[in-house]
Length: 163
Image (tube, rainbow, N blue to C red):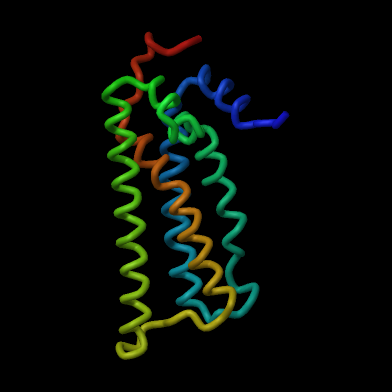
């Protein structure tokens, strides 16, 4: 007998209405997440100069968990059946765009690392700087599909929402 807590979460999320604040929380958290590694590179790299990157991940995780598009059912055929045709197409397009964005970000990172020293750009030199880049990319990979889906699937009409 196995215990699957995601099943309970999915049942709870099915009846939870979508909120515009969730999409803006995700977008704002991703913006802060993009700025932190850049600020870390421009700082001296000394510990304690800037706040740690990890506490800024909490709003991103909260926003992701509040979204109905982050359920594990979005990744199975049976789960996708609960969405209408337009929502399924929008979720698939959001996944494609998120993966494309991640590949572009990784390409930009490698390009920056390849030509940065030649041009005198700041490069990561401490473990803290490398970790801020790694955590930012990891959490961006986790949150981008949900964020894109939140913006691509229009909000339901207020009269269609469950009370």
